[in-house]
Image: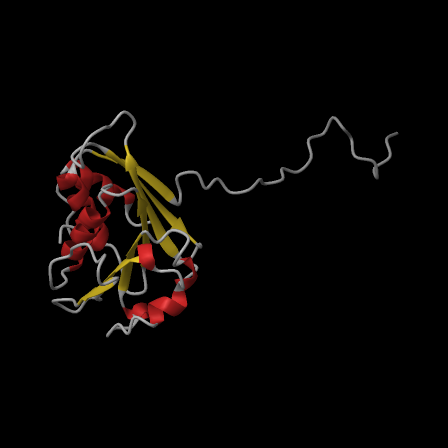
Length: 202
């Protein structure tokens, strides 16, 4: 007679769940064919952002970071043309309605992270705004644990000016901020009309 205190190797034991499969859950990669599609992607993303969001943009010079940010501003419905803030470090674009302001930052010359951002004397609260930071990787992550990282790279085999295809990776970091509506972003890149009820079209 078998000893009940000794597990029978022929009987399967309880299933131990492994770590959750997060592949695709917090990261989205898109192929963006041209600047017009990059602008549409920005417009859709801008329509999905909310006050307190930090978007950290990375990519080489001329990758399309400002083109994407210009679309974000249009999608948010903010005032003023979004251009490269290189010479002023940061620009504030107030909302034309009831939405949050857009704070557009060029962190290329920022070295002090949070402290230096606070010293910019912006006439808006960062927690009440959407903050988009070009060249922000490794510089502004301390602003908040929950943020979106957007990396823009040349698509495989692409050469030449900004009109060539780009690979855009959007990743939600920190666990407190979900990835924005992936289907809406895909539709925007494809040039399809957004689903009814959203404001992603700007």
